[in-house]
Image 1 (cartoon, rainbow, N blue to C red):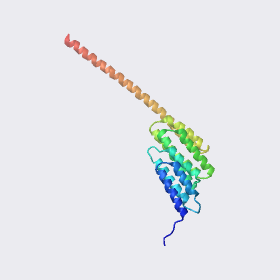
Image 2: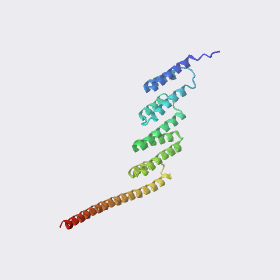
Image 3: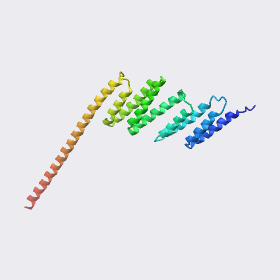
Image 4: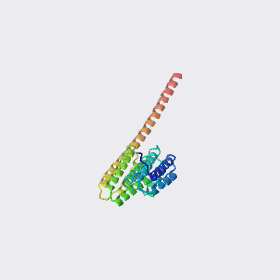
Length: 234
């Protein structure tokens, strides 16, 4: 016997299909409208919210996976989660992960300390307010910042690092051991910076000495040739 599908379920599926078509053409306004209509259909539909969350997540993932991620569009999608009241632990974790990816991108690709650390601060405030995941969020931030510091130190871009340390200091509790680590690494970097300055000065002095020596040798060579010519033609 063929099972007859609930007409309301067919209507929901129609709205979901239309929403997906809108997402495929990057029309978020249209997609949100169809998702809203799917939510307004009466009756019990346990999978409805999940069937809306998943295509929105996939769309976000597509925006993030581009060579130059479209963070503005990602933010618009995250706003849709809020407007449609689709928040749950899964979505909160997903949003947190996207924000961390954005902060990492801003740091590594643009050295944008202000915006990336604003994201870190916002994530920590949210974690503290919710009373969960604060340690996990802080550990993720530490990993991202640590990788950034290692990259820039390897490139000898010392000037970028002290502002990073200052911002990290404001994010961590005063009694955290990270402050001792930051003080130590700051001293090491300061010494490395001075050593680099000294090395560059020595290299420049060596270049000057080398240039002076080269000029002197050329002058001596010219003098020898002239002397030889005088003797030869006298």
